[in-house]
Length: 571
Image 1 (cartoon, rainbow, N blue to C red):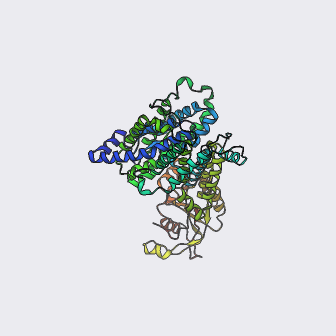
Image 2: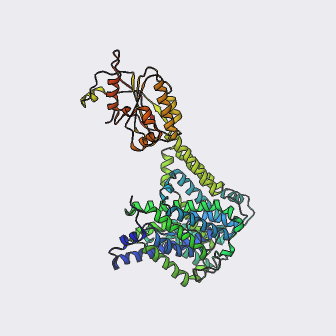
Image 3: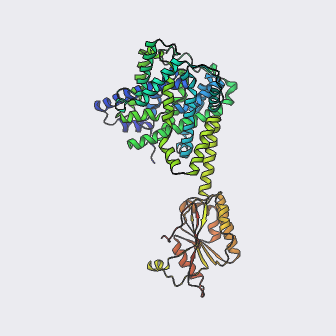
């Protein structure tokens, strides 16, 4: 697939740009800003930083990442998934570590994009992503219970331990904070959808809750001062980098990089289906890398593409990346003009926003489908990944989910079944092929699926004995790839058959598999005359070379590697 440069993307995107399109982008950008404002403030706090840090992140990400993005619709900023990792890093190593891991992750993402390795990021199964997302949702929800209740409780290494602390008691909830949080939650759940374009439910809930708290004179903790600048006093400097602690930050940086890349590309996949415009994955990763390299030096936290904001921009009629830039400028204007008002927003109101966001961020349709249809491997992978995310370090959760999914995948593709079938001789004759009689001493084995290290054991078992067979034909049209273990299995089978003065034939070998066979020299050992384009040609050759006067049938033994039996010979 053609890779376009950033200049080519811009040129294609803004070709024919006119005032009418700009008006669409302007309205969409303002709508996205209304959605992004409460989320930016909330995710800033949820990341272990400040509301101002979240706001700065959204502003810079919208301009930097949006301008360099691999698609016109991507809108980046702080997200719930990212905040779940960052809060643990901040609590364990300090805010400086959050900035440093952001820079390290940005450099890694940038390298992945420059090396054009973006397609490998997609090699994560859906159950792992769903389980990880649900686990992060639990972390976000649990992490906001303190703000929702208006209390400060003991910290914990995981969301599961934190939840256990609440059941032990030892704290007194602030009823005013609880009421403010409930106002936001109820507003967001019952806010009419038709009003979302005018005023998002999250922003409406914050306004109503803040007004109620101010009018009632409730004593609750608020966001506090919002600096009227995008260059925060608390930001990454070269002299506050914890050089002695960098080794401990490598694993968290890898988690941030993996999550940022996956979330950005998933967002692009969803948006491309809605718009029909393809995301250029490597350019998107370059944009994410550059943005996350820069943002910590302004005091922001790591950012990634956000599905919620991107979807709002698309539904609002946005056409180009100007939507992202306009949304950032609107957020900047809010920070400069409304800083005193924003500073009076109760933390309990932000907690309400995040709790609803956590509930909604679960991939409910995918979960219902998986459990409703009882896909056992998917269900197990989902549950294990979710529990690992909630109870362990997120880096370990990603590793466990990846290893589990790899094991499930290998088990599925390595599955082999054997069934006996008959060759349709009349059909072969109708093609003009000279089939005089059929012989059970000629067998055809249909292989379907990759012949690699995980499937060779079954392959060897199935072909361990060739008693009564004089010609074995392996139809390999359904074998997309073969590794060195597969080559060795074929070599072993050839040697076994050759010692018994029998014949091994291969049919339908695709180009990639044939390259491996040629590199190994196996083609010369088997004999080029024993390679055929199709199984029926091999059967004709087998009949010519070996004729049995006692038999009138040819039997077929299809060895299926993760596939259904092939009922007929294909030409």
